[in-house]
Length: 254
Ligand code: NAD
Image (tube, rainbow, N blue to C red; front, side, top):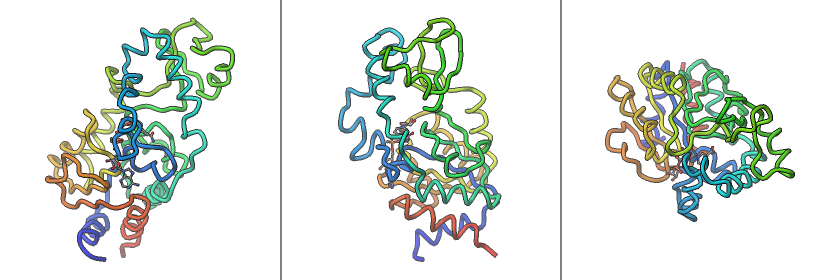
């Protein structure tokens, strides 16, 4: 292999604890569009971002109706993990993965076989719905079944407004999950950011925490990110091709 790929291979082969931050870019090859890439949801329809603000969602029933319809048709329900998700599961099986902090809500890392305890869903999950009034949690599939009769499905216990257990703009991240992600960023030899524009905070701050703690930084992303300049290696290639090769190099070390 030629640099910079060989440099990334060497860094991963030498690392005992690898923390990976993933974004929407790792799931585009599973058919789930990203937000800010060339064919991203918000690149194509900038107004769609307004649907994901907590205040708007809570105060406007029409917004909730539109969001539930989007949830119903979300590509994640039929998506399968791709070669990159499987490569990270292999890294986990080899005992080299400290954690995956993911901004994705699709659950594909767990589906690929990564130990669920090693997957930190910092922006929540599409697979659960939470009542914003009483906190009751219901599998999303059950709530979507009721969508035929109700366009704004309410909590079966208290009639409160429900939302998928995903983080909207203006909504605080879960402190315990974020803390675990910070610890994983601090306690790794290599921090690898995959398929994320690193534009959303506080998650992008994990990169700084890892670098400040002495980790090497590897970025795999088709487009430039604000952290390329502090990265040891930047690979602007297809994630589904790069990750299996990197994981193989890392797990086949002598
Ligand atoms: P983003 O859309 O801001 O950035 C994705 C990046 O991945 C882009 O820079 C793009 O160039 C790159 N990319 C896409 N496909 C690639 C490929 N095959 N190979 C190499 N690079 C590729 O995504 P983000 O940084 O994760 O932030 C978006 C937010 O949207 C997150 O908060 C996340 O919660 C949410 N989101 C999640 C999903 C999901 O669950 N799959 C999908 C869309 C958005």
